[in-house]
Image (cartoon, rainbow over all chains, first blue to last red):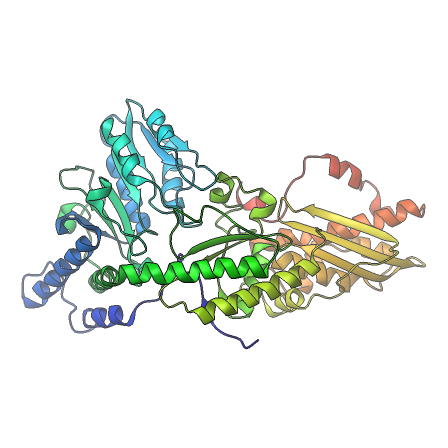
Length: 383
Length: 153
């Protein structure tokens, strides 16, 4: 089998699209003006940011001045949570399968006297709206539930959940970092008050994210300083990254339908072929309400990191569902929450497909996984 | 670029002494699939010398590599010498593991001790280094995952 480089970890990050880099280049070179300066060079940068904001707002169906740039999706999550905690609300509702940017922020707040309810999910990874309704209290300040999960790709019924929160006058935030560009995201239809996004998951640059804050929703400012981002989040703008984010959003909007079909076809092909090639494999999470490019599979008799290393040796990049000894903890809280047994979690691999993945890539990955899991099974004392 | 050095990767990709024996003199199994790591070792002993060792392992790269390295280290050793082998020596021979992975090498160390204990018990042998080592007691205790778990506490 001829070695081939296959990147199949688009949920971790995506490569920068050529058009995005081209759009960014002038702002890394000659157009270096500070957007706050009032001479031509500054005004050019300011105008470019404005256009970027508009492109992103079109992708999510918002007004352009409802978009606030941040350094990352994690920062947007932090801002949404800290910003919503003004007044008397001492209680926050979330799900058990949120990204660490939410979970670790909330566990910090618990040490500061806040009370957090973590909603269970079913074996598909879905929150039960009835549970949310029961969890909301008089002192609930915020509900934060992700739109699509980063490990198993489950898409939550956000619209329904938002309605329940709003019926009780509670703010609703959603982390849509994995959803953006992969499924339609319309903030008005969903009804969310705040939503987090990140550029590097949609073929844009790293180091730039955004928080959508619905017009009329007042939350605390996040960074004090200059007047950037309408005075809510100070700091000279990362102009090239913002331009890249805008271009990536424009491209995502233009090709959303094709992108979904492309990912869905290849993901389903990968799932079918893997199932046929590797007898001891199990898909985690539902195949229905799921991101089109996501496949999360557990293999019996082979440990995740060992599979990852051997695949890496063969040129393939994927993620594990648990990381023995790595800093991002063991085992996956998401797989635990959907009831995957611990022994199986250790043998989990996340494949995530994107716009540059080809059928030949999938064929190569299936062959490689078959070879690697066979080798590890022979090495395993488990029967 | 790799998270492990070339020696570790070599032992992981091409593990030495893999397999099982039909009639081993001692069997040692340590770890648990729930923890994500399990090692099994079979040993052959003649005149108090370990003449052969075969292993099978389920686990991460460092668990497999350290198991493989450990078998190469104990073959040819006197039983008393093999009992002195520490996980630190296994890591040294591998020229280092990432900090968070050091604990994975304990697996091999413990499995070897259990295999020798098994041999000693069925052959009525007594080794000073085995005093106080009781695998039955260890199994009764609530299983503590070694590999990786210390990170979370």
